[in-house]
Image (tube, rainbow, N blue to C red; front, side, top):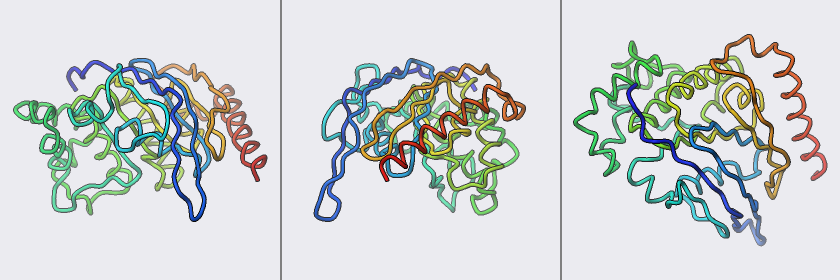
Length: 266
């Protein structure tokens, strides 16, 4: 895959989101954090802590009740519309009547800035197919793919515009444990090559540790930062990392921290 748009730095300043629940209100945050250019930040926490809400705010799909999200000082909404933010969700959202190549090229039809690269679309497609190891599946329809392959197509689609920021919302959450660990290792390889600033949200700490440079642990509601863990394992990362003593100890510590936060709330 050829050069990317220069990676974007991310800053969240006192981000808080409040919404109605029945007759009451629930809140997420406030959260303040930074993501360096080219860094892979993992945000891990229990279900309902606000991970997906935060990612949607960073993508400009949702406005915070309080605080501010900035990407290199710019508005997430404006950057997303210009194709400078790639997004992949737990549901790959592939169009069933389009093959793998056509699904990956969809952003060129939806984003004004991405459309500027339409003439280079074939070259970008070939690059991202090679990067995500989907070359042999280019003409397959979604129903002909396994769940893991469909998620790989979703990541490839998010990368094809060469975004400065990649936002991943539980992309492997619906898959079995072995498949999601395999894809997490694949994702770490892809991101090490793409060098795109990335935020991955997950409730699986092992998955996050296989991918990230740094991990933020969030509490249960209202979703505040409990701890930040530096993940110093070098790239590329392989399956042997799962039996590494540092990986095992850090995973156990992260799980224990999250479990304590959950039981304290309960």
